[in-house]
Image 1 (cartoon, rainbow, N blue to C red):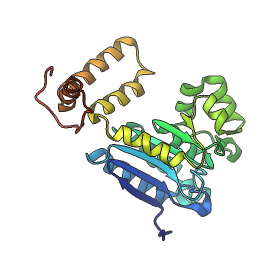
Image 2 (cartoon, rainbow, N blue to C red):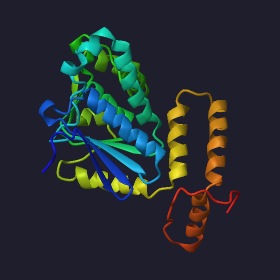
Image 3 (cartoon, one colour):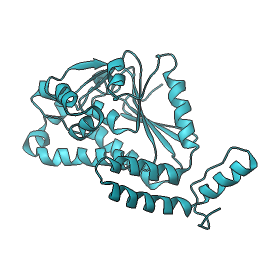
Length: 269
């Protein structure tokens, strides 16, 4: 039986950690405690080596309805909003910078901060019934949790303005057509589909995946010269690790590689 006081559930399968937002009575709206626990969980992943992929999802058929307004409207929310938002921004930055791949598994509602948490993951898988909304202007607010940065990169300025100014609710198929959802999967198969993708990522070379994620994240804001310099740095790191030696050996021996993320002797295999 689930402990309802456990507002962020942790579940490990091999190298895959699933973090489940667990406030189902409020469609998993995020309060201060849940922000803190999510930040602590991401920090632990970044510092450790056992977790090699992270799945973020919500309990009982919804992803996340956004920030808990009743919590945000408390003393700190109105008396010192910048402090509250800086704390939230730290969690969003941790998610973006996490050196392991992340997958958002979305059922039901993903609104406001909840949608932007999903967009902050590297991949998004949704059921056809999922619905998404940049709900902020309906609450006399502007986008936060990285939405103003993520949306124009993913859909362009006009669609980003439509989604944020009008706060339209869109379904998974439209989100997929706009490039905001990576895959749409039926309800009955989404768990196994996400599990397979996460397992593939967890079996990949940790150093190379971390460098690739950072390069792609940074590339949209940089010149070609900057990107080439970043690629040089990243590839040097990759070539100093044991995984590249294992990859070449597995290719030569016609077998699947076993990646560990360990450092090797460097140089070409």
